[in-house]
Image (cartoon, rainbow, N blue to C red; front, top):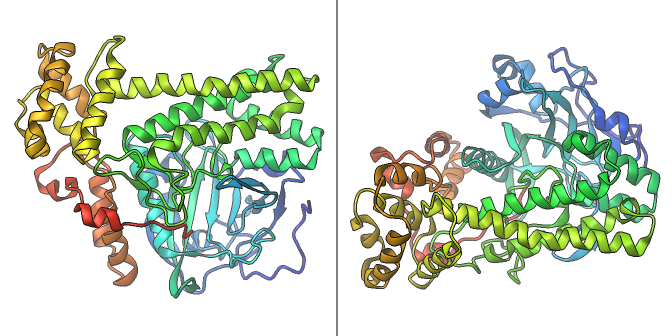
Length: 506
Protein backbone atom coordinates (compact mmCIF):
# COMPACT_ATOMS: atom_id res chain seq x y z
CA UNK A 1 0.00 0.00 0.00
CA UNK A 2 1.40 3.38 -0.99
CA UNK A 3 1.99 5.58 2.06
CA UNK A 4 3.16 8.82 0.49
CA UNK A 5 1.05 11.47 -1.14
CA UNK A 6 0.26 10.76 -4.77
CA UNK A 7 2.14 13.57 -6.54
CA UNK A 8 -0.40 13.55 -9.34
CA UNK A 9 -3.24 14.29 -6.94
CA UNK A 10 -4.67 17.74 -7.58
CA UNK A 11 -6.34 19.53 -4.71
CA UNK A 12 -7.05 23.09 -3.85
CA UNK A 13 -6.41 22.83 -0.11
CA UNK A 14 -3.56 24.76 1.44
CA UNK A 15 -0.60 22.70 2.61
CA UNK A 16 -0.60 24.13 6.12
CA UNK A 17 -2.68 26.38 8.28
CA UNK A 18 -1.86 28.47 11.32
CA UNK A 19 -4.96 27.44 13.28
CA UNK A 20 -3.88 25.65 16.45
CA UNK A 21 -4.97 22.02 16.59
CA UNK A 22 -2.54 19.90 18.60
CA UNK A 23 -2.72 16.73 16.51
CA UNK A 24 -0.74 13.69 17.59
CA UNK A 25 -1.05 11.16 14.77
CA UNK A 26 -0.39 7.68 16.09
CA UNK A 27 -2.22 5.90 13.26
CA UNK A 28 0.02 7.57 10.68
CA UNK A 29 3.16 6.79 12.70
CA UNK A 30 2.45 3.20 13.59
CA UNK A 31 0.36 1.71 10.78
CA UNK A 32 2.19 2.42 7.57
CA UNK A 33 0.73 0.17 4.92
CA UNK A 34 -2.84 0.81 6.03
CA UNK A 35 -3.38 4.23 4.51
CA UNK A 36 -2.57 6.62 1.72
CA UNK A 37 -1.61 10.19 2.55
CA UNK A 38 -4.04 12.50 0.80
CA UNK A 39 -5.56 15.95 1.06
CA UNK A 40 -9.12 17.25 0.92
CA UNK A 41 -10.33 18.67 -2.36
CA UNK A 42 -11.69 21.85 -0.84
CA UNK A 43 -15.00 23.69 -1.14
CA UNK A 44 -15.77 26.57 -3.52
CA UNK A 45 -18.10 28.62 -1.29
CA UNK A 46 -18.34 27.05 2.17
CA UNK A 47 -20.80 28.04 4.89
CA UNK A 48 -20.73 26.79 8.46
CA UNK A 49 -24.21 25.44 9.22
CA UNK A 50 -23.63 23.75 12.58
CA UNK A 51 -20.81 23.84 15.08
CA UNK A 52 -20.82 21.55 18.10
CA UNK A 53 -19.45 23.91 20.72
CA UNK A 54 -19.72 21.46 23.61
CA UNK A 55 -17.76 18.84 21.68
CA UNK A 56 -15.19 21.44 20.70
CA UNK A 57 -14.70 22.20 24.39
CA UNK A 58 -14.26 18.48 25.14
CA UNK A 59 -11.53 18.36 22.51
CA UNK A 60 -9.77 21.40 23.93
CA UNK A 61 -10.54 23.48 20.84
CA UNK A 62 -11.57 27.11 20.71
CA UNK A 63 -15.11 27.18 19.32
CA UNK A 64 -14.78 30.85 18.36
CA UNK A 65 -11.69 30.06 16.32
CA UNK A 66 -13.47 27.15 14.64
CA UNK A 67 -16.35 29.48 13.74
CA UNK A 68 -13.97 32.03 12.22
CA UNK A 69 -12.94 32.21 8.58
CA UNK A 70 -9.76 30.32 9.41
CA UNK A 71 -11.71 27.61 11.19
CA UNK A 72 -14.19 27.30 8.35
CA UNK A 73 -11.30 26.84 5.92
CA UNK A 74 -10.22 23.75 7.89
CA UNK A 75 -13.74 22.34 8.27
CA UNK A 76 -14.42 22.84 4.56
CA UNK A 77 -11.19 21.16 3.44
CA UNK A 78 -9.68 24.40 2.11
CA UNK A 79 -6.80 24.40 4.59
CA UNK A 80 -4.92 21.75 6.53
CA UNK A 81 -3.72 22.51 10.09
CA UNK A 82 0.04 22.46 10.44
CA UNK A 83 0.14 19.36 12.67
CA UNK A 84 -2.49 17.43 10.74
CA UNK A 85 -1.47 14.48 8.58
CA UNK A 86 -4.52 13.80 6.41
CA UNK A 87 -4.85 10.25 5.16
CA UNK A 88 -7.36 7.82 3.72
CA UNK A 89 -7.57 4.60 5.69
CA UNK A 90 -7.60 1.19 4.04
CA UNK A 91 -10.10 -1.49 5.04
CA UNK A 92 -12.18 -4.28 3.58
CA UNK A 93 -15.64 -5.45 4.58
CA UNK A 94 -18.52 -7.83 4.22
CA UNK A 95 -21.41 -5.82 2.78
CA UNK A 96 -24.77 -7.56 3.11
CA UNK A 97 -22.85 -10.83 3.47
CA UNK A 98 -20.63 -10.42 0.41
CA UNK A 99 -16.92 -9.78 0.83
CA UNK A 100 -15.29 -6.71 -0.73
CA UNK A 101 -11.50 -7.04 -0.40
CA UNK A 102 -10.78 -3.32 -0.61
CA UNK A 103 -13.15 -0.54 0.44
CA UNK A 104 -11.32 2.15 2.39
CA UNK A 105 -12.08 5.83 2.89
CA UNK A 106 -13.62 6.67 -0.45
CA UNK A 107 -14.93 10.05 0.71
CA UNK A 108 -13.35 10.56 4.11
CA UNK A 109 -9.99 11.69 5.40
CA UNK A 110 -8.55 11.30 8.88
CA UNK A 111 -6.98 14.67 9.68
CA UNK A 112 -5.34 13.30 12.80
CA UNK A 113 -5.88 12.63 16.49
CA UNK A 114 -6.41 14.98 19.42
CA UNK A 115 -5.98 14.21 23.10
CA UNK A 116 -9.12 15.58 24.72
CA UNK A 117 -9.56 17.18 28.14
CA UNK A 118 -10.11 13.74 29.70
CA UNK A 119 -6.87 12.43 28.17
CA UNK A 120 -8.76 10.33 25.60
CA UNK A 121 -7.36 9.99 22.10
CA UNK A 122 -9.99 11.06 19.54
CA UNK A 123 -9.92 10.88 15.76
CA UNK A 124 -10.97 13.96 13.79
CA UNK A 125 -12.01 13.21 10.21
CA UNK A 126 -13.64 14.97 7.29
CA UNK A 127 -16.45 13.11 5.52
CA UNK A 128 -17.40 14.19 2.01
CA UNK A 129 -14.09 15.92 1.33
CA UNK A 130 -13.47 14.57 -2.19
CA UNK A 131 -12.06 11.64 -4.10
CA UNK A 132 -9.35 9.42 -2.64
CA UNK A 133 -7.50 6.40 -4.06
CA UNK A 134 -10.29 4.28 -2.50
CA UNK A 135 -13.18 6.11 -4.18
CA UNK A 136 -13.44 3.58 -7.01
CA UNK A 137 -16.11 5.06 -9.30
CA UNK A 138 -17.45 7.47 -6.66
CA UNK A 139 -16.93 11.21 -6.50
CA UNK A 140 -15.84 11.23 -2.87
CA UNK A 141 -18.41 13.88 -2.00
CA UNK A 142 -21.40 13.94 0.34
CA UNK A 143 -24.78 15.54 -0.16
CA UNK A 144 -25.77 18.04 2.50
CA UNK A 145 -28.91 16.19 3.59
CA UNK A 146 -27.13 13.05 4.89
CA UNK A 147 -24.41 15.22 6.45
CA UNK A 148 -27.03 17.02 8.54
CA UNK A 149 -28.75 13.71 9.24
CA UNK A 150 -25.59 12.21 10.69
CA UNK A 151 -25.01 15.31 12.80
CA UNK A 152 -28.52 15.08 14.25
CA UNK A 153 -28.53 11.32 14.78
CA UNK A 154 -25.10 11.20 16.40
CA UNK A 155 -25.98 13.91 18.89
CA UNK A 156 -29.32 12.27 19.68
CA UNK A 157 -27.65 8.94 20.36
CA UNK A 158 -25.00 10.64 22.52
CA UNK A 159 -27.54 12.20 24.89
CA UNK A 160 -29.45 8.90 24.98
CA UNK A 161 -26.29 7.45 26.53
CA UNK A 162 -25.33 5.25 23.59
CA UNK A 163 -21.65 5.10 22.52
CA UNK A 164 -21.35 6.90 19.22
CA UNK A 165 -19.19 8.89 16.89
CA UNK A 166 -20.15 12.56 16.97
CA UNK A 167 -20.14 15.51 14.61
CA UNK A 168 -18.00 18.52 15.34
CA UNK A 169 -19.34 20.53 12.42
CA UNK A 170 -21.51 20.47 9.31
CA UNK A 171 -20.54 22.65 6.37
CA UNK A 172 -22.35 23.45 3.13
CA UNK A 173 -19.67 23.36 0.43
CA UNK A 174 -21.31 25.59 -2.15
CA UNK A 175 -20.87 22.82 -4.73
CA UNK A 176 -23.45 20.43 -6.14
CA UNK A 177 -23.30 16.66 -5.95
CA UNK A 178 -24.76 14.49 -8.69
CA UNK A 179 -26.87 11.59 -7.45
CA UNK A 180 -30.24 10.82 -9.05
CA UNK A 181 -30.36 14.62 -9.38
CA UNK A 182 -28.12 17.54 -8.49
CA UNK A 183 -27.97 18.11 -4.74
CA UNK A 184 -26.22 20.63 -2.47
CA UNK A 185 -22.92 19.31 -1.15
CA UNK A 186 -21.75 19.12 2.44
CA UNK A 187 -18.84 18.04 4.63
CA UNK A 188 -19.17 16.52 8.10
CA UNK A 189 -16.35 16.70 10.63
CA UNK A 190 -16.61 13.44 12.55
CA UNK A 191 -15.02 12.64 15.91
CA UNK A 192 -14.48 9.04 17.00
CA UNK A 193 -12.66 7.03 19.63
CA UNK A 194 -11.02 5.56 16.53
CA UNK A 195 -12.01 4.52 13.04
CA UNK A 196 -10.65 0.99 13.49
CA UNK A 197 -13.25 -1.39 12.10
CA UNK A 198 -13.75 -5.13 11.79
CA UNK A 199 -13.08 -4.47 8.12
CA UNK A 200 -9.65 -3.04 8.95
CA UNK A 201 -8.66 -6.41 10.38
CA UNK A 202 -10.24 -8.27 7.47
CA UNK A 203 -8.15 -6.20 5.05
CA UNK A 204 -4.90 -7.12 6.79
CA UNK A 205 -5.85 -10.77 7.28
CA UNK A 206 -6.48 -11.12 3.55
CA UNK A 207 -2.93 -9.92 2.88
CA UNK A 208 -1.61 -12.83 5.00
CA UNK A 209 0.89 -10.45 6.56
CA UNK A 210 1.05 -11.67 10.15
CA UNK A 211 3.56 -9.02 11.19
CA UNK A 212 1.22 -6.24 10.02
CA UNK A 213 -1.76 -7.97 11.63
CA UNK A 214 0.11 -8.14 14.92
CA UNK A 215 1.07 -4.49 14.62
CA UNK A 216 -2.55 -3.53 13.97
CA UNK A 217 -3.84 -5.62 16.88
CA UNK A 218 -1.19 -4.25 19.24
CA UNK A 219 -2.11 -0.73 18.18
CA UNK A 220 -5.82 -1.38 18.77
CA UNK A 221 -5.13 -2.95 22.17
CA UNK A 222 -2.93 -0.03 23.25
CA UNK A 223 -5.66 2.37 22.20
CA UNK A 224 -8.80 0.60 23.41
CA UNK A 225 -7.73 -2.14 25.84
CA UNK A 226 -4.43 -1.06 27.39
CA UNK A 227 -4.94 -3.31 30.41
CA UNK A 228 -4.41 -6.28 28.07
CA UNK A 229 -1.05 -5.11 26.75
CA UNK A 230 1.08 -7.37 28.95
CA UNK A 231 -1.34 -10.31 29.14
CA UNK A 232 -0.15 -13.60 27.58
CA UNK A 233 -3.52 -14.13 25.88
CA UNK A 234 -4.03 -10.50 24.92
CA UNK A 235 -5.36 -11.19 21.41
CA UNK A 236 -8.04 -13.55 22.67
CA UNK A 237 -8.79 -11.04 25.42
CA UNK A 238 -9.09 -8.32 22.79
CA UNK A 239 -11.62 -10.42 20.85
CA UNK A 240 -13.59 -11.06 24.04
CA UNK A 241 -13.65 -7.35 24.87
CA UNK A 242 -14.89 -6.40 21.40
CA UNK A 243 -17.60 -9.07 21.71
CA UNK A 244 -18.61 -7.57 25.06
CA UNK A 245 -18.68 -4.01 23.73
CA UNK A 246 -20.81 -4.96 20.76
CA UNK A 247 -23.22 -7.00 22.89
CA UNK A 248 -23.73 -3.98 25.13
CA UNK A 249 -24.02 -1.58 22.19
CA UNK A 250 -26.66 -3.53 20.28
CA UNK A 251 -28.72 -4.00 23.45
CA UNK A 252 -28.65 -0.24 23.97
CA UNK A 253 -29.67 0.36 20.35
CA UNK A 254 -32.65 -1.89 20.75
CA UNK A 255 -33.60 -0.29 24.05
CA UNK A 256 -34.42 2.95 22.22
CA UNK A 257 -35.80 1.31 19.07
CA UNK A 258 -32.80 2.15 16.90
CA UNK A 259 -32.21 0.34 13.60
CA UNK A 260 -28.72 0.87 12.20
CA UNK A 261 -29.73 -0.25 8.74
CA UNK A 262 -26.33 -1.16 7.30
CA UNK A 263 -24.46 -3.37 9.77
CA UNK A 264 -21.68 -4.32 7.39
CA UNK A 265 -18.33 -5.27 8.89
CA UNK A 266 -16.81 -1.99 7.70
CA UNK A 267 -19.44 -0.25 9.85
CA UNK A 268 -18.59 -2.09 13.08
CA UNK A 269 -15.93 -0.46 15.25
CA UNK A 270 -13.67 -2.31 17.66
CA UNK A 271 -14.16 0.59 20.10
CA UNK A 272 -17.87 -0.24 20.46
CA UNK A 273 -19.07 3.11 19.10
CA UNK A 274 -21.97 3.47 16.68
CA UNK A 275 -20.62 4.61 13.32
CA UNK A 276 -22.15 5.61 9.96
CA UNK A 277 -25.68 6.97 10.23
CA UNK A 278 -26.69 6.29 6.64
CA UNK A 279 -30.01 4.44 6.33
CA UNK A 280 -30.69 4.34 10.08
CA UNK A 281 -34.13 4.95 11.61
CA UNK A 282 -36.14 4.51 14.80
CA UNK A 283 -38.97 2.02 15.04
CA UNK A 284 -42.35 3.56 15.94
CA UNK A 285 -45.21 1.07 16.14
CA UNK A 286 -43.28 -1.92 17.42
CA UNK A 287 -42.30 -4.53 14.87
CA UNK A 288 -39.18 -6.71 15.25
CA UNK A 289 -39.04 -7.04 11.46
CA UNK A 290 -39.05 -3.28 10.88
CA UNK A 291 -36.74 -2.20 8.05
CA UNK A 292 -36.46 1.31 6.62
CA UNK A 293 -33.25 1.10 4.58
CA UNK A 294 -33.87 1.27 0.84
CA UNK A 295 -30.94 -1.06 0.17
CA UNK A 296 -31.88 -3.73 2.75
CA UNK A 297 -34.38 -5.41 0.46
CA UNK A 298 -34.16 -8.78 2.24
CA UNK A 299 -34.45 -7.41 5.78
CA UNK A 300 -31.00 -8.66 6.75
CA UNK A 301 -30.53 -5.79 9.20
CA UNK A 302 -34.09 -5.55 10.52
CA UNK A 303 -34.54 -4.36 14.11
CA UNK A 304 -34.86 -7.87 15.54
CA UNK A 305 -32.01 -9.30 13.45
CA UNK A 306 -29.37 -6.93 14.81
CA UNK A 307 -28.00 -9.23 17.55
CA UNK A 308 -27.54 -12.12 15.12
CA UNK A 309 -25.90 -9.84 12.56
CA UNK A 310 -23.54 -8.43 15.17
CA UNK A 311 -22.50 -11.97 16.07
CA UNK A 312 -21.99 -12.80 12.39
CA UNK A 313 -19.72 -9.77 12.03
CA UNK A 314 -17.79 -10.77 15.12
CA UNK A 315 -17.19 -14.20 13.62
CA UNK A 316 -15.47 -12.45 10.70
CA UNK A 317 -13.41 -10.45 13.19
CA UNK A 318 -12.42 -13.65 15.00
CA UNK A 319 -11.36 -15.26 11.72
CA UNK A 320 -9.05 -12.33 11.04
CA UNK A 321 -7.40 -12.69 14.45
CA UNK A 322 -6.84 -16.47 14.30
CA UNK A 323 -3.09 -16.37 13.55
CA UNK A 324 -2.55 -14.29 16.68
CA UNK A 325 -4.80 -16.22 19.05
CA UNK A 326 -2.87 -19.49 18.89
CA UNK A 327 -0.06 -20.98 16.84
CA UNK A 328 -2.09 -24.18 16.54
CA UNK A 329 -4.77 -23.41 13.94
CA UNK A 330 -7.30 -25.89 15.30
CA UNK A 331 -6.91 -24.62 18.84
CA UNK A 332 -7.08 -21.01 17.63
CA UNK A 333 -10.37 -21.73 15.87
CA UNK A 334 -11.83 -23.41 18.95
CA UNK A 335 -10.87 -20.58 21.26
CA UNK A 336 -12.06 -17.88 18.90
CA UNK A 337 -15.32 -19.72 18.24
CA UNK A 338 -16.00 -19.97 21.96
CA UNK A 339 -15.51 -16.20 22.32
CA UNK A 340 -17.92 -15.47 19.47
CA UNK A 341 -20.48 -17.98 20.72
CA UNK A 342 -20.37 -16.18 24.05
CA UNK A 343 -21.91 -13.15 22.34
CA UNK A 344 -25.41 -14.64 22.66
CA UNK A 345 -25.17 -14.95 26.43
CA UNK A 346 -23.55 -11.54 26.80
CA UNK A 347 -26.19 -9.87 24.64
CA UNK A 348 -28.98 -11.63 26.52
CA UNK A 349 -27.61 -10.36 29.83
CA UNK A 350 -27.37 -6.78 28.53
CA UNK A 351 -30.79 -6.90 26.87
CA UNK A 352 -32.37 -8.30 30.01
CA UNK A 353 -30.79 -5.50 32.05
CA UNK A 354 -32.07 -2.89 29.57
CA UNK A 355 -35.59 -4.31 29.70
CA UNK A 356 -35.53 -4.63 33.49
CA UNK A 357 -34.64 -0.95 33.80
CA UNK A 358 -37.31 0.03 31.28
CA UNK A 359 -39.91 -1.86 33.34
CA UNK A 360 -38.71 -0.30 36.59
CA UNK A 361 -37.53 -3.55 38.14
CA UNK A 362 -34.81 -2.67 40.61
CA UNK A 363 -33.85 -6.24 41.45
CA UNK A 364 -33.48 -9.44 39.47
CA UNK A 365 -35.99 -12.25 39.18
CA UNK A 366 -36.16 -15.30 36.93
CA UNK A 367 -39.50 -14.17 35.51
CA UNK A 368 -38.27 -10.77 34.32
CA UNK A 369 -37.62 -11.78 30.71
CA UNK A 370 -41.00 -13.43 30.47
CA UNK A 371 -42.63 -10.26 31.77
CA UNK A 372 -40.61 -8.10 29.37
CA UNK A 373 -41.22 -10.30 26.37
CA UNK A 374 -44.94 -10.35 27.05
CA UNK A 375 -45.04 -6.56 27.04
CA UNK A 376 -43.12 -6.43 23.76
CA UNK A 377 -45.60 -8.91 22.31
CA UNK A 378 -48.47 -6.64 23.37
CA UNK A 379 -46.78 -3.65 21.72
CA UNK A 380 -46.31 -5.64 18.54
CA UNK A 381 -49.77 -7.23 18.44
CA UNK A 382 -51.54 -3.90 18.87
CA UNK A 383 -49.08 -1.77 16.85
CA UNK A 384 -48.23 0.45 19.82
CA UNK A 385 -45.50 3.03 19.53
CA UNK A 386 -42.35 1.59 21.13
CA UNK A 387 -41.14 4.83 22.72
CA UNK A 388 -44.53 5.93 24.07
CA UNK A 389 -45.35 2.39 25.17
CA UNK A 390 -42.50 2.48 27.68
CA UNK A 391 -42.82 6.16 28.55
CA UNK A 392 -46.49 5.83 29.46
CA UNK A 393 -45.64 2.72 31.45
CA UNK A 394 -43.25 4.93 33.39
CA UNK A 395 -46.17 7.27 34.12
CA UNK A 396 -48.25 4.31 35.29
CA UNK A 397 -45.68 3.58 37.97
CA UNK A 398 -46.77 6.70 39.86
CA UNK A 399 -49.67 8.55 38.26
CA UNK A 400 -52.21 5.91 37.31
CA UNK A 401 -52.90 3.96 34.16
CA UNK A 402 -55.00 6.45 32.17
CA UNK A 403 -52.27 7.68 29.75
CA UNK A 404 -51.12 4.11 29.07
CA UNK A 405 -54.64 2.79 28.59
CA UNK A 406 -55.39 5.70 26.26
CA UNK A 407 -52.33 4.81 24.20
CA UNK A 408 -53.58 1.23 23.82
CA UNK A 409 -57.08 2.47 23.00
CA UNK A 410 -59.44 -0.37 22.08
CA UNK A 411 -56.69 -2.86 23.00
CA UNK A 412 -56.64 -1.67 26.64
CA UNK A 413 -58.50 -4.77 27.93
CA UNK A 414 -55.76 -6.98 26.52
CA UNK A 415 -53.21 -4.98 28.53
CA UNK A 416 -54.94 -5.28 31.91
CA UNK A 417 -53.82 -8.83 32.86
CA UNK A 418 -50.21 -7.94 32.07
CA UNK A 419 -50.47 -4.75 34.14
CA UNK A 420 -51.65 -6.78 37.13
CA UNK A 421 -48.66 -9.09 36.79
CA UNK A 422 -46.29 -6.15 36.43
CA UNK A 423 -47.65 -4.55 39.60
CA UNK A 424 -47.21 -7.78 41.52
CA UNK A 425 -43.58 -7.84 40.37
CA UNK A 426 -43.08 -4.06 40.87
CA UNK A 427 -45.42 -2.98 43.65
CA UNK A 428 -46.53 0.64 43.90
CA UNK A 429 -44.50 1.32 47.05
CA UNK A 430 -42.06 4.07 46.14
CA UNK A 431 -44.02 4.73 42.95
CA UNK A 432 -42.75 8.29 42.33
CA UNK A 433 -39.14 7.18 42.74
CA UNK A 434 -39.70 4.20 40.46
CA UNK A 435 -41.37 6.40 37.86
CA UNK A 436 -38.49 8.88 37.99
CA UNK A 437 -35.96 6.07 37.50
CA UNK A 438 -37.96 4.68 34.57
CA UNK A 439 -38.16 8.10 32.94
CA UNK A 440 -34.37 8.28 32.96
CA UNK A 441 -34.17 5.23 30.67
CA UNK A 442 -37.42 5.63 28.72
CA UNK A 443 -37.09 8.76 26.57
CA UNK A 444 -40.07 10.83 25.54
CA UNK A 445 -38.24 12.38 22.56
CA UNK A 446 -36.36 10.42 19.89
CA UNK A 447 -35.44 11.44 16.32
CA UNK A 448 -38.78 10.44 14.86
CA UNK A 449 -38.37 9.71 11.20
CA UNK A 450 -40.96 12.15 9.85
CA UNK A 451 -39.66 14.98 12.03
CA UNK A 452 -36.09 14.35 10.94
CA UNK A 453 -37.11 14.39 7.29
CA UNK A 454 -39.11 17.60 7.74
CA UNK A 455 -36.15 19.34 9.39
CA UNK A 456 -33.76 18.18 6.67
CA UNK A 457 -36.11 19.25 3.90
CA UNK A 458 -36.36 22.75 5.37
CA UNK A 459 -32.59 22.99 5.75
CA UNK A 460 -31.65 21.67 2.33
CA UNK A 461 -34.53 22.70 0.07
CA UNK A 462 -35.39 26.04 1.66
CA UNK A 463 -32.09 26.98 3.33
CA UNK A 464 -34.00 27.25 6.61
CA UNK A 465 -32.03 25.80 9.51
CA UNK A 466 -34.58 26.84 12.17
CA UNK A 467 -36.56 23.53 12.14
CA UNK A 468 -33.30 21.56 12.33
CA UNK A 469 -32.06 23.61 15.27
CA UNK A 470 -35.44 23.35 17.00
CA UNK A 471 -35.45 19.56 16.67
CA UNK A 472 -31.83 19.34 17.81
CA UNK A 473 -32.66 21.43 20.89
CA UNK A 474 -35.57 19.10 21.77
CA UNK A 475 -33.44 15.99 21.32
CA UNK A 476 -30.71 17.36 23.59
CA UNK A 477 -33.02 16.67 26.56
CA UNK A 478 -34.77 13.41 25.61
CA UNK A 479 -35.96 12.35 29.06
CA UNK A 480 -37.61 15.59 30.22
CA UNK A 481 -41.21 15.89 29.04
CA UNK A 482 -42.16 19.47 28.24
CA UNK A 483 -45.60 20.72 27.23
CA UNK A 484 -44.32 23.09 24.48
CA UNK A 485 -42.56 20.13 22.84
CA UNK A 486 -45.55 17.77 22.87
CA UNK A 487 -45.66 17.54 19.06
CA UNK A 488 -42.16 16.06 19.01
CA UNK A 489 -43.35 13.06 21.04
CA UNK A 490 -46.01 12.06 18.52
CA UNK A 491 -45.41 9.23 16.03
CA UNK A 492 -46.21 9.49 12.37
CA UNK A 493 -49.31 7.84 11.00
CA UNK A 494 -49.08 4.14 10.21
CA UNK A 495 -49.35 5.01 6.51
CA UNK A 496 -46.44 7.45 6.67
CA UNK A 497 -44.32 4.97 8.61
CA UNK A 498 -45.03 2.23 6.09
CA UNK A 499 -43.76 4.45 3.26
CA UNK A 500 -40.70 5.79 5.05
CA UNK A 501 -37.35 4.87 3.46
CA UNK A 502 -33.82 5.87 4.34
CA UNK A 503 -30.79 5.93 2.07
CA UNK A 504 -27.01 5.56 2.14
CA UNK A 505 -26.22 9.10 1.12
CA UNK A 506 -22.99 10.17 2.79
